[in-house]
Length: 126
Image (tube, rainbow, N blue to C red):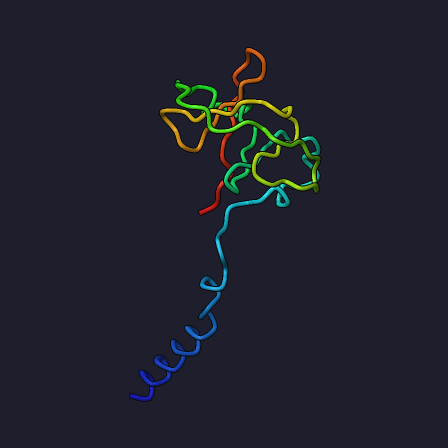
């Protein structure tokens, strides 16, 4: 009986050590301020508080067959790392660049730069 009491008390104490560690951690989408400065000239833009990063070097994104669906927005501002990245702000895309949704994927947007179509992947957590 003493043995079971000791095991029970140990479990209660152990559970107390872990209580709240995960519940206090909020999983949120990264913001432009989370983009490390070591990436320097990261090609990104923000729309609806989601950071979209140039995905031209991501093989699985390049291999997708995507259909442009509708125009979502135009790039409204340009800023540098650490600057103001409100919705519609890009680091490299020029002001006025049109951004489109895709029929197949909600997490990939396409920016039309001249005649080129550049894919951007939403950077999300969770």
